[in-house]
Amino acid sequence: MGKESELILALFDVGAVKFGSFMLKSGIQSPIYFDLRVIISHPKLMETICEILEDVVGGLKPTDVICGVPYTALPLATILSVRQNIPMIIKRKEQKEYGTGKLIEGEYTEGQTNCLILEDVLTTGSSIVDTALVLRDHGILVGTAIVVLNRNYPAADENLMKHGISLISLIKVDEFLEVLFTSGRITKDRRLELTFCGGPNHSTCSAREATKD
Ligand SMILES: O=c1ccn([C@@H]2O[C@H](COP(=O)(O)O)[C@@H](O)[C@H]2O)c(=O)[nH]1
Image (cartoon, rainbow, N blue to C red; front, top):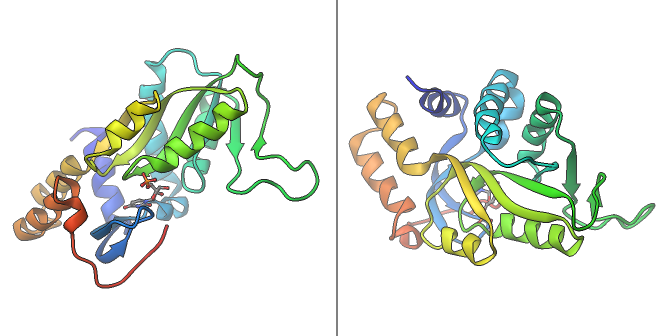
């Protein structure tokens, strides 16, 4: 079994996959929610994700800094930073209202710092785009983003491409569901129901309750 398949099963087994009715950050309704925040209670799992990330980062052009999108990607970015000796920057969710008043923490040189963005789950790509736009406003160069899990929302690629961001996905939702099905963790019916939630009918997925990121 490959590293990615092992990761999918481990994520499922620690409760990172939730079934029900959820409203995503984008307002899209979905019967599945990937809650990767649970990994912070499982250091070995974070290590596994970082090992896969390292393989990807090794094949990219030199990265000057890593920026994790708050919150789940922050510990991943930290581990990657330490293991690869690549410095980190943090784009705060809100500008600091006291002290330094900063929005970006960490060192960078305007026009010369090549930043890699790290995100946990991607739906529309707007969290990555918002992060990239703020970084660029500060003179930081952004070309590539890595996401642990891509929900395959149809407009996401276009959204990122429009902003000149190339995306690398460690796992795509179809692969995720396939591995859960073949390992007996979800039924054929469940898989079929969820397949439509990653594809063209994504926005028509039903919802009964709401959960926000
Ligand atoms: O199953 C999911 C879906 C989304 N998230 C969180 O939402 C944003 C990404 O949404 P965009 O529409 O791409 O901006 C990201 O921060 C995820 O953490 C999620 O956790 N689980």
